[in-house]
Length: 403
Image (cartoon, rainbow, N blue to C red; front, side):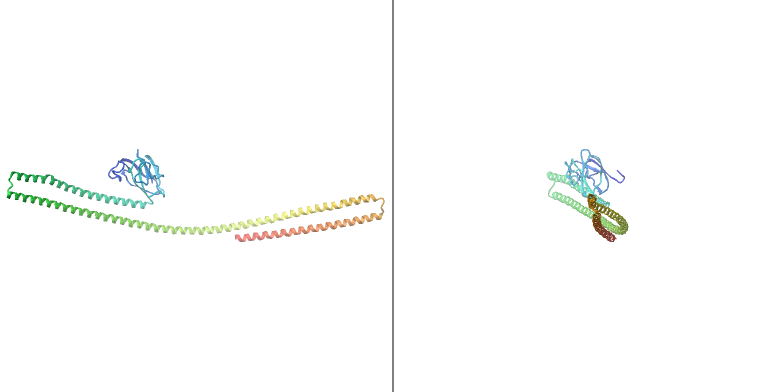
């Protein structure tokens, strides 16, 4: 609990005439801060403490003005309680017009109203005070009129019960004794007529006084109604002024907010442009570095491929030449050794000539294969150069697109 929390102390006692459900439902009712069935008024989003002491009568919030067993139309976010302290914060989805009732007996509570702001609550409170003042004044005037009518009824009852019977008894007594002759009877009749006229005049006067009093009461009620209407009109104008001022203040605040948002958008756009330019520069530098690294890597890989291919071709050519020449040499050597003793020097020359011719053929074949391999290597270099030029064009195009 904090200092800003509003506390509603809820107790149970026998209803009095100020309870909104006096003589309806249960004889007992809820008292809120000492007022029988007093209204509970709250503002959405604010904190309220309900300090409940109601043994035998479970206090709860509902949309029903009756309540009773089973908690009809229960507002579930407010837990039903007989004894304890409940912290309640009305939310935006809670209905405006509620009631607080008992989950055990009927018609024990009163109204619970939820407002959006303090101005609406104050306006409703002023309206209730005006209605209460009007009702109090009307009740006072009605009580005065009732008291006056009761006095008139008492006077008429006195005449009817005491004066007229006694007067009638005196007349009958005079007639019975025979003392009321013709002339005397006329006098008695005149006296009776005079008395009756006096009573009638008195009654007419009372009726006139009642009518005058009714006129005064009606005039006072009309004056009260006029005063209440004037106060309500004044409050309405004040509320309209408040709403107009709030609308102006809200529009000014919205305009300032729009300007702040526009400035923030401009700053954010400039910051984004600077960040984009910085990022582009960084990306360009990174791409150049990556391209240089790629170029060096490609060059190294190409050199390695060339060296590997050249070494492999040389080894293959050497093996091929050896595979071709060695059998021939061996065969020639074997034959030379076989016929060495039987052939003449001319034969040896012929054989040597044939061997020289064979070696020339082998050399010619080796040169042809070496030239073909050189051409293949040159073609591979040309392809690598084309690939390098393509990579450079792609990098330049990407840099231009990002800028």
